[in-house]
Amino acid sequence: MIRTPRILFMGSGIFAVPILEALANSHDLTLAVAVTQPDRAAGRKRVLTPTPLGRYADAAGIPCERVQSVNTPEFLDHAAALEPDMIVVVSFGQILREPILNLPPLGCLNVHASLLPKYRGASPITTCVLNGDDMTGVTFMQMERGLDSGPIYEMHRMPVPPGITTDELERTLSAMAGNRICDCVGRIARGEITPCPQPAEGVTIAVKIRKSDGFVDWNEDAAVLERKVRAYHNWPSMSFRVNVRGRVMSVKITKASYTSFKAPNAEPGKITALADNRIMVSCGSGSLLLHRIVPEGKKEMPVADFLNGARLEVGDVLLNGQPEQQPTP
Image (cartoon, helix red, strand yellow):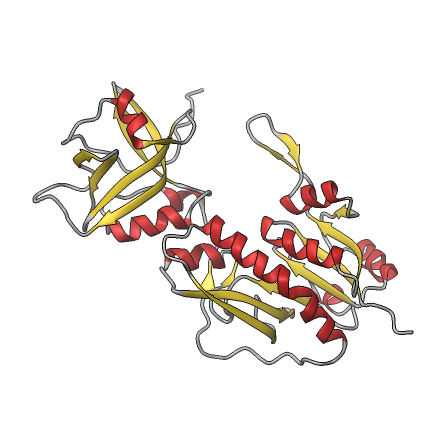
């Protein structure tokens, strides 16, 4: 009898959860164990918090090991003892070196949230939304030493819905990958598909997003700022500053739209209209319409609720975003 393929899974981010769920529930595959990053201190109280993948695995009763580095000799020996036929890696956060890449006879399979070779790297979904792409997808790729440069087993495409945020698109793409992963692994195990090299043309890199990327600059085009609001939802979020009754506070934008209209001679950041529960703000080109925001120290709210207390007026100027001020020692 031919045994079912044994899978060693490595993942950390929320994108990996539906894929682990599919592998764990498959009758045609055997999940040896899931591996994730160690729990980290998070929040102001620095509470030890598992990764999204670790949290799901714990709740689902899936054995999940927290591993600081999968490249140590100790972990390599441990992994070899599990006798995996394949390692599936999704949103893991560690670089796999050659000893672990060469361990399973069927190799290491990575699920990447872009149409490779476009958007190799750390932030393919955010970059897709940021650039206003109309098509995206997921790629099942054989891993090698390079950054997302390995040969491709399968690629699944989908149109990008208008107005979608990064977190919404991430859920959609991860569900797509979860629906396809078991079939792909099975066909690889049966020798029914062979990976094809990535095209040499069209390589782009999706760089890691920084917190400072979310600071609003009202000199930018309003259409660009609207895409940034969606691309950086929920992290790092687009934020600006505003003077409310003598206090400068930071405000995050969670929902916005844009118009090509710009009031004549209006400087960037100036409020040019307060109507229909929206704030119209002049930008370098066009105007941004703010719909929902998160004022500093508050919960998300409609702009109308904020205006009830902030007493902003047409002609007031909103400030660009900047790092939070640290208390003076």
